[in-house]
Length: 211
Image (tube, rainbow, N blue to C red; front, side):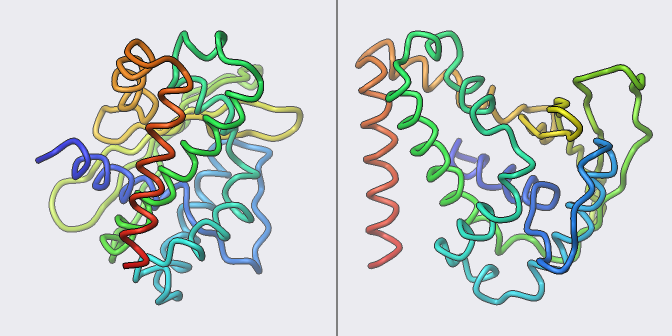
């Protein structure tokens, strides 16, 4: 299994929890486990109800993510974690470009993965956290055919709400999955080189989708 195939599979599973919330429902972000529970339960319903999403319509997926998911994700922290120690070396303009290209990369990977979302269900494990904690891990598992699959989320408290900043599928955190390859690209070609590499991949994927 190639790295790209593995990533698509991991993100397909992660989609079940980070997913696409039906517009009629308001998501309660005041408790981390409640946030994950609502996003998880409503994801399956939304994916099943939208044939364009099931077919991998990138524009529709990005629009839904922007409207329903991103308010509950600290994407700057997610990107910074994937870029690692080089994030602080990047200028504000470079950081903005990295976030934009990384987001497009993830969304296009989601688009190729969503067709794998079928009849799975989410099981939420007991939350091990203190009331004063400002960072927690919410542990879940995907139940379907075969053995349950581990799916965990790192969340931070931002004011009165909780936000997701990393996802763990089968013991692999999303940021860790990208950090080594990003570091290699920056080491060879600098931060602008990584931005160009991501932009080129996104442009190629976009051209392939149109073709």
